[in-house]
Image: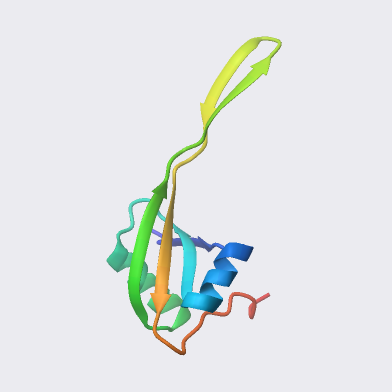
Length: 96
């Protein structure tokens, strides 16, 4: 099971990482906080203070077409917010 799916790189997440040393990741929905902590420490070589997780509810959509109404929903995603020790950072752009 791959724990970390991808980092979240947006303006809001980048600003949060600069101010509070907190980085955001999309993670597997079955992963717990301990698995996320171990995966981040192993992959990036940093020390993690704490991990907060949240599950995004699927977005329900309704489309109106010539054939009628089509209803659907998006996938469930889980986010992890990882707080690092003071003075440590993760550079997402060094492998580009």
